[in-house]
Amino acid sequence: MIPNLRNALMVALLSAGVAACGGDRNADAGRDADNAAEREGDSAAQATTAEAPVSETAAPTEPTGFDIESASVSQATLGDFPYFTLPTGYENPNNPIPVRDFDRVAVWTGDRLEWVEGRIFETLVHAADGKGWSRLEVIRNLDHQVKQAGGVKVTESKPPQETVDAWDAGQEYSQGRGDIYNDEVATWLVRKPDRNIWLHFVGNTASGSLMVVESAPFEATSALLPASELKQQLDTTGKVALQVNFATDKAEILPASRPQIEQVVTLLKDDPALKLSVNGHTDNTGDAAHNQQLSEARAAAVVAALTAGGIDGSRLQAKGFGQDEPVADNATEDGKARNRRVELVQL
Image (tube, rainbow, N blue to C red; front, side):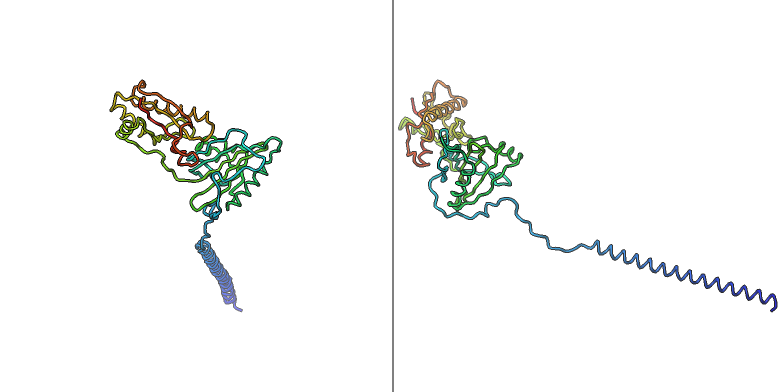
């Protein structure tokens, strides 16, 4: 073969080989790019799927804590307030605690304090002489009575410290509330059509405390007598009764009775010659000697309020008669309310 022709043929063969190799690499690169695009597409689709919100129906919110409305309404016939008695062999070792006709206290429901306004009965609970104390026996007897009355047990548990603090902040200590700081509180509810009746019991290894709370709306027991009517009754009968409201078992005049005191001040200022005896009276709840002291203190509190209003103290005197001069039957709540009074008697 001619040398020049052989060289040219070899160059052509080498060029074809190089082109063939380059073509394979370009094809591989193309396939790699296609695969990468597919992977990116798959990733994007997955991301889109992950980001898409999932439509679900929200589960209904379940009520938390004790619901008073969940308790069945009792149709059972109850006796006289406070309705429930201590078990045989248990008693209050001290003088009975007077019933409060209207006050505000808290009861523990296991998850919160339920504040109740109404009538309050309280008692200490001790075992009688010769009988051993059993907290369980008291609890079981109260369980039995409440069940008979158509009620339910709400809780028997220890309130947390923050609840005890709130209890202290909203309610003064009382014997019936017991040692809520260290002991479990048992609570029952009897739900009546027109009211709720709560039982609260706290007991330890030696004694206990019981409270019965009956919800009731506030009813004013005092009516404002203007100065003109005060004078008319004094001129006619020589005396007039005021239904002045005081704090429970105290001589503190409640704010709602201040307008009545102001009318007495007006009466005395309009008639500078008028002199009055301010006489305090109570119902027969509790100890007679205590009621005597309470009536004297309440009469003195009214005199102090009148002198603070600008009346000369020499025109006034304070007397207490305790429970000795009722004007109504103490067997009824209405009668007791009428007996708790302040009388102005012309001197």
